[in-house]
Length: 223
Image 1 (cartoon, rainbow, N blue to C red):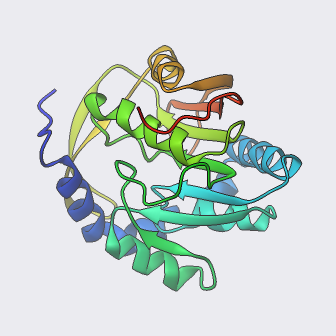
Image 2 (cartoon, rainbow, N blue to C red):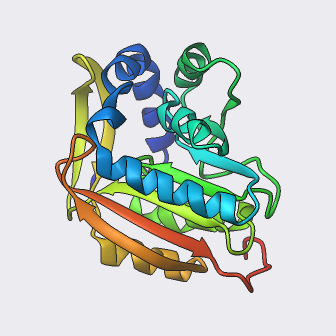
Image 3 (tube, rainbow, N blue to C red):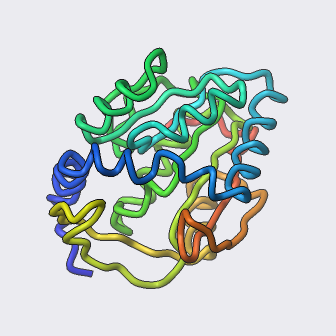
């Protein structure tokens, strides 16, 4: 696919550092235009609360809009993002909410410490050969039975993005995946997929949503 396996994290970090302010401005009110996505997030929040609550990680949180929305749904959410500049913007726009710099490829969270995890269109820059490792980390930090909510672009191609969010320079790949492929990766990682759907909205011309859970009997860390 032409993806630099050694440099994609640096490319992603630098690209989003360069667009952080404009990205926040362009996406801040996007959920107002996406009632189906709001419904999905509300259902996820209901599951977390029904299981007794606890910390929820918004991994790849960007400027923090999903994290803040989950907090409005009475979920104890915090955000993690690869881009230090994105985290600066998130802290500025959403004071009082926890945001920290980190990578989904090596989550600095204790085993089984998270009640739920959201990766909302944040897997789209992860190369295929890194997805399994990322899902292993998601499984490790989630409590058994904890829900995982994914948003992603549906398709079969990968494209190099060189400009975006107000015309700023970027250099990173955007990967589109089919539900069947995502489900297979999740199954291999020890998740049970409970629901999936495809929709078209302001979030994505063709977006995929998957709700999965870490298997209840799964007590192992990363193998």
